[in-house]
Length: 283
Ligand SMILES: [Fe+2]
Ligand SMILES: [Fe+2]
Image 1 (tube, protein in one colour):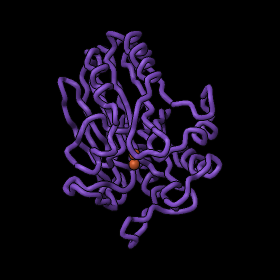
Image 2 (cartoon, protein in one colour; image 1 turned 120 degrees about the vertical axis):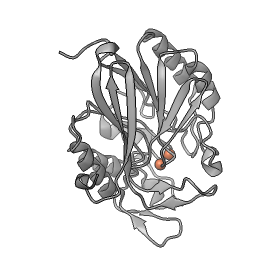
Image 3 (cartoon, rainbow, N blue to C red; image 1 turned 30 degrees about the vertical axis):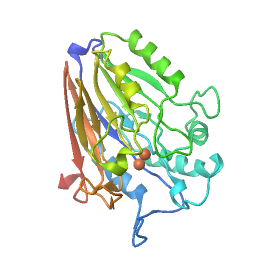
């Protein structure tokens, strides 16, 4: 039987993010010279996840799930135009060996997401924030999507919900997932599209010693930063990546990556796997 206290926990999970699935086309690099197939790239990541020993208990998918908006940046897409991309994502995720928990990012569309994923949203475009427990650990998924913006924001009702959720689960080691990075990474152009009220989130979370890590997507690179005892981790994309060197926008064709987290009692360990080779056999 699964333990219900964190001191007995023994499991792993994966965080993968920025899948950027686009039905009917590929991602074009700003230079226009080449294209990137985000579906094929996600398939490679899922093949590796399927080879993990032991298999993960669950997968958290960190937002920018789909991005058909990138196929033609001059258009504002309707939920109906987004739906095929969510259906394609569903198909691609089917071989995963575990349940999934999804977050939304700046390229997502809430209405299309709720419709295709058949969530229990109270309104068609309701924010998708929630929490869940596993083996004595508590996990919180936030929704930082601000429609029409590249940066993120947590509206006041979501912060009220977050405080209540943290209060209710006091004493349980907690991990928080949010798409946008709440603190600066030191990469100028990315830091302009961070979580605009990240300081508010930080102030709230630092009052809860149970919060161990904040895990983000959005930045398409791996980094970890500590701020007053709180650690923020970022995970690379399952598709194209962003330069760790350039202070201006520079997109790289890979390699795809994801984060593995191992939980044993009160010990948390993590590593990022970069898929430099063709398959799991190359790792
Ligand atoms: Fe992204
Ligand atoms: Fe993003």
